[in-house]
Amino acid sequence: MADRSRHQILLVDDEASIRECFAMLLSSAGYDVATAKDGFDALLHLKRALPDVIISDLNMPQMSGFEFLSVVRRRFPQIPVIAMSGAYAGDAVPGGIIADAFFAKSGSHAETLFSTVADLIRTSGAREAAHRNKSAPVWIPRNGKDSEGVPYVVLTCTECLRSFPLSVTEKVIPEVRETPCWFCPNTVRYVIDFSQSVVSPGKRAQSAAYAGETEATA
Image (cartoon, rainbow, N blue to C red; front, side, top):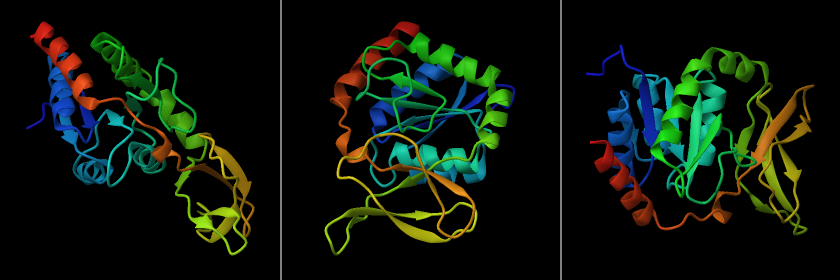
């Protein structure tokens, strides 16, 4: 049973060895950690209990972290989230990713993750207010091409819930976009799925690196 006197973290990653390594690291830092193997598994966990922070990988089967974090922002704006990946460098949140912070699996140290988690918990109240004051973007899959060969997506308005098509360029840029709803005064914020163009380096190497940090903190 989780100790509610300790902060709860939900860790989402499709690689079992990485889940185990990060769970051990975070537990050693004093957090209670639950794990999920993909976005769908994580949403099932959120039906049972809400964590203080979510840490999610981006490249996962079934439901990617890109889509999962978009769902979390819309349904659970009170929960701060950290996106993590080996496909990006630096500590800035990459464009188009709906997260409060980013952790690069390659080249980052566990202490960086600990300080990021602590900061998000400390500022969670202000972040929740900011999240609620701005509508969360919808993650949209690429639907293909119309009869004239023009690429398009189908958007669903978050207010009137009506759907409408939207032509897009071939090149998908990872950024939050806006368009007026065809049926009501609402402005729909959206991100077009670009996850297939993001490739992470070998996860085995990442797992081995953090296994070394786990042993060092033991």
